[in-house]
Amino acid sequence: MNVYDTANRLASEIRQSEEYNNYKNAKQALNLNTGLKEKMQEFEKARYEVQLEMMQTGKNNEEKYKKMQELYAELVKDEEAKKFFEAETKFNVVIADVNKIIGEAVRDVI
Image 1 (tube, rainbow, N blue to C red):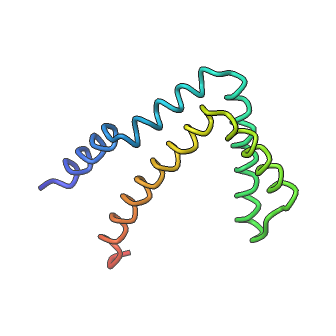
Image 2: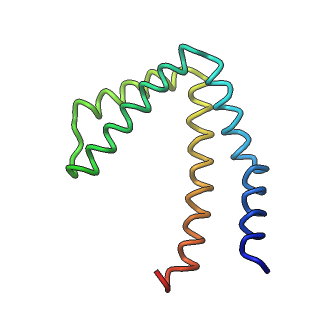
């Protein structure tokens, strides 16, 4: 069996998965709502800053972290945003699991 054929089949199966399609649909719905999209972009920026600071310093900037939490709390009050976060989480779990499986398969040579 050709590994490239298997990888292409996996990619196709991911695109056909419920998690992928729910995430894609939630993202499209979010993008149609300009106000919500802007709030989501503000949250994503805050989340990125918190993660970057944690990686660089090993500590959370409490002010930035609190701002991120407040943005998230405001967003999840909106049903569309809540669906987006749920779909995003489920899709990320699938991708993380696939990466883990592949990583374990090649662990002995890395």
